[in-house]
Length: 146
Length: 146
View 1 (cartoon, helix red, strand yellow):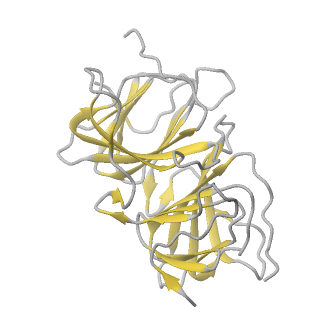
View 2 (cartoon, rainbow over the protein chains, first blue to last red):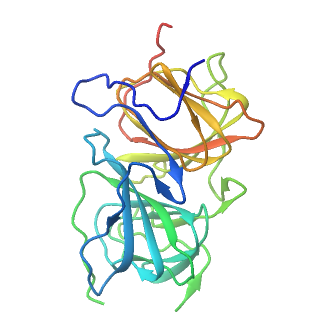
């Protein structure tokens, strides 16, 4: 049986992305750019993003991203009609869901319902990283009044 | 700040599932049933499934599942128009993509393109577990002739 390291088989349809393996190392995926998340603002802080599936011409109805929040960092406190599915891969953190705060550790998985006000926060000393899956077609987040 | 363990905030829309946290322990998520994957057959072997998001009335355009393949187990060798996104969480395994075999370890992420023949296999001594995300609306897998 032939074993290859990371080659991309030809796509079944010309012009569309072929299958691929993205190697994981030190909480980064090789070949996937690490982006700053949004422009800096006072309502979020210290977040990087890697888009694993969804921005290379795939036809998936979802996007798979990895976010990492630095110590003392936090995401926007926001709500939107689209839902989140989140799986923790690194460190510890917490999520605000409505009025409740839940502590999160490795593997814990969060479903954020439509229009639920939510925020992810890192109060620990190491980065807090998680996969986040969203619909490819989704509405723009809103910032709640309070 | 109030900290709760695992309560479900009320959903914004009656009758729809509210946000929830699914606790991870020993490669299982509490409150999520472990299902046998498909009926036993000679073209797959030793697979369990947990559906984390998608079968409780969520409106996501995707389903988030966790599959675990026992030692010497394997998934169906199949193809379909819908794509897979896979993230390895446990053990080691391999994936067939077209004619190439790629070894997989923790964190490695696989995009399976439309109509790519693929199969996941576990030749190691411990379970091989991975998240698998698919479109909620998807076509039926086909078994290639050879």
